[in-house]
Image (cartoon, rainbow, N blue to C red):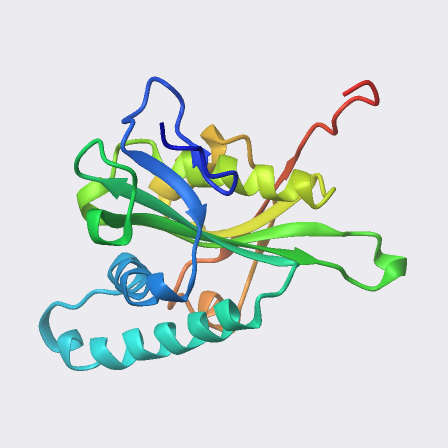
Length: 203
């Protein structure tokens, strides 16, 4: 019998049993970089010439965050196995990823929260509930850190992402303008928020 890994967050029983979420590591770096770059950037047409440089930048930034091993940072990977064997590096694909970081502003601001970023799901694994699973896993991370406030940003014109976050229980705090949005070159960013319920003292 294979012992459960305490670092892995299993999918609900109704979901595909070969999918799990675990902390990402440097050995996942190449696959994580592919998922992130493909999710956020278009490689068609003339963009194919700059795509490798964008991927390199994402790769190097993520590598630095993973190498730092900060106790206030977590990168999670949704891993999909293609047979019932235990999820191993040679038997799995990175289906999605997300990052969570503890933000601690100055004490007088009183706004300690977990900031969620870089939520991405591989095109081949979309519409399977993986994004919601990754968000729930971030909530578990926040609760282990003793933090019950979550923040994230989404572009105002990204209706699919906004619907996802609404389903996950996030609400809009405020829109954020930028010089590009003032000029009509891009949409505004929306700051979203969710409050988790702290465990009762009896738990």
